Amino acid sequence: MTAESIRRGFSSPDNTRDLGILPDVESVIVDPGNFSALWEELGWHTLIRQWLSGEIPEHTLHNPHRYSNGLLRKLVSFPGVEDTDLLVVVAHDVTTLPVLASACGTTLTTIDFLNGIVISGDQYGAEIRFADPENTLRAEWSPE
Image (tube, rainbow, N blue to C red; front, side, top):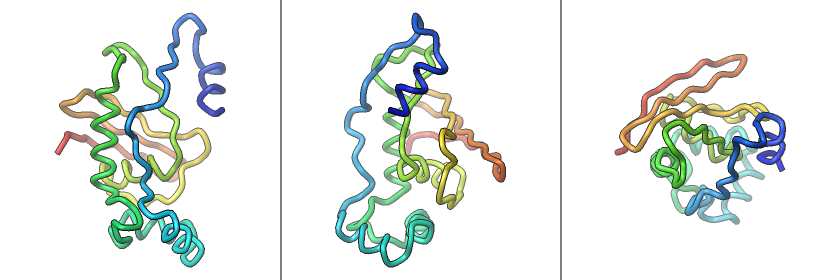
């Protein structure tokens, strides 16, 4: 729904393609039961902050830095995207927060609605930018 609204509101109908769902993006959640129990116990912000700081075991949530690296590797080599194309990816906070944590060293726990990360690059490296009222972040990323 959000992706379609963005496409209709911010693009020329003659100049867009829907590339579908990014293949092979796995959930950050390894054990939904453990995740739900920790969310209930700690609350969202504490849970996410602890996860991004490496305090949540990998049998509950994937390591945020490895997850981020794999996701960025897939995004910068997305099939069917040319160098001159603008690729817009709509994702939940739990998918974008590890990118900011890994690239920029933050432990943000939320992103404002319709805010996001700007990534420019290719399979050899990328620039990652993010801004909100409290933060202006920029980092270089290269595959591990």
